Amino acid sequence: MWMIPEQNQSWVSEFILLGLSSDPTTNSILFTVFLLIYLSSVMGNGLIIMLICMDTQLHTPMYFFLCILAVLDMCHVTTTMPQMLVHLLAKSRTISFAGCWLQMYVFGALATTECTLFVIMAYDRYVAICYPLHYTVILNWGLCLWLAAGSCFCAFLSALLHTFFTMSLPYCGPDKINHYFFEVPAVRSLACMDTHLIEMVDQVLIVLIGLTPISLIVASYVHIVMAILKIKSTQGRCKAFSTCASHLTVVSFFYGPGIYIYIRPTSSYSPERDKQISLFYNAFTTLLNPVVYSMRNKDIKRAFLKVIGYGKVDC
Image 1 (cartoon, rainbow, N blue to C red):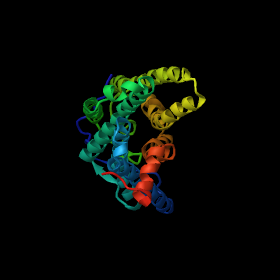
Image 2 (spheres, helix red, strand yellow):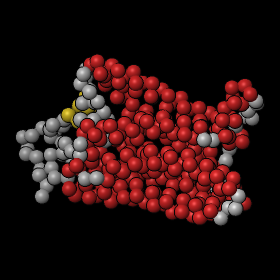
Image 3 (cartoon, rainbow, N blue to C red):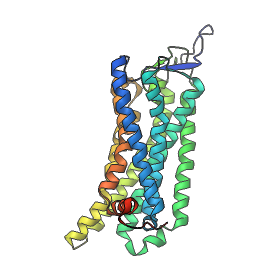
């Protein structure tokens, strides 16, 4: 049964983010660390975008989707990190209800878009390895654009529903959120009513948004592995596996922490533990993605060498 707040209770019009720490010295150290992480993430993903745009040899579906991933990572980390950096030094950590609504929606929409993009990237690898002679025919530019636009549309629509269900709950106090940004489980734990029904609706949405893409990725890689095992050359098998290793690595970094945060029930919500896990898939994953793709990708390395003067880049 839902517990509706009494009429004399005041509704929350703003929230206070408690952040990562209340100790000024610790906050100063954290500010320096996360400022470097944020700048490195933006620069790393920005470099990937620049290289792909400048080098015509990287104008393929694989790198088109990688460029979109880099854009999403830049936007993703920018949604939360600048605010966190300000709060590490500022005395006031108050955010309006509308500001909470906006950050939660944008963060959720970008994260959901990444979920669907990883499926598209897995499909790209499936076509490239299983149907190499028909790769450009199957994954033509028209289909690539439709896949990218469709994933964004579906993600922003589902995030709107997810955010609406959370922010339509009654919040009558307390107004302090033990987190560094407005993540759904942290905000929902402050609702002054039974959220069981909302949690059930959220679980359905999360299964569709999270587990369905994972199932599709697994199915793609089952076919990919079967195709690779049919390759007689050991060198050929290694080359085929290496083209998938980067994608599998970033998928693991992203999905592992995200599933833990959103799949488990609110009753097991642990603020300190959840903040640490959120930091990994929000801050560190966006930093690691360009590193993983650049270190294991000869085409990216070649394009970078051209930019720094070891060759001419076609524009």
